[in-house]
Image (cartoon, rainbow, N blue to C red; front, side, top):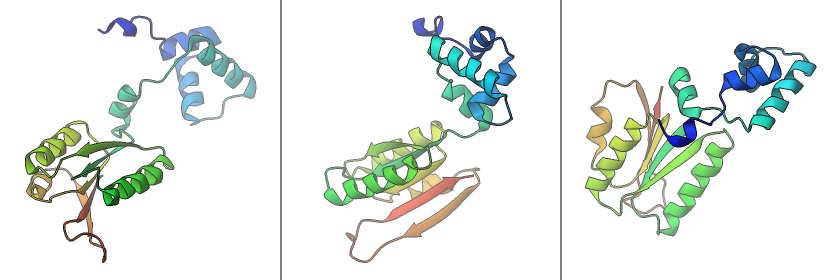
Length: 167
């Protein structure tokens, strides 16, 4: 156990402070059921008083979604890739997703390592704008995966973008 976990307030602490059940706190946090305005106010006050932060790792394990997308690019210093990353980040941010960016420096070995790391982190989707030499790693899986490929005229010849969305 990490040192800060011992003092980190839990949903049970919030429920006790607000005088409600943990289920009610969950309803307020997730906006999944009606909670009276008075009860919601007590729960929100308890959350604020305790500086409660939901455990997103635990939530992602239960929901089987991490709300993260991995993106692998071959050279982040190239202005083309910087624009692609910025566009992806803006797009996913609007949908409450986080973006994990990996730069491969045009190395197939680093690309492979990045693919494996992102899959181990259970990202919900993966965008690869890189060498493409490790595509077999993405097909060599039992995951249910949808694939979309595109190359746009005017982009550098090596700029293939591959998008894998984990279902």
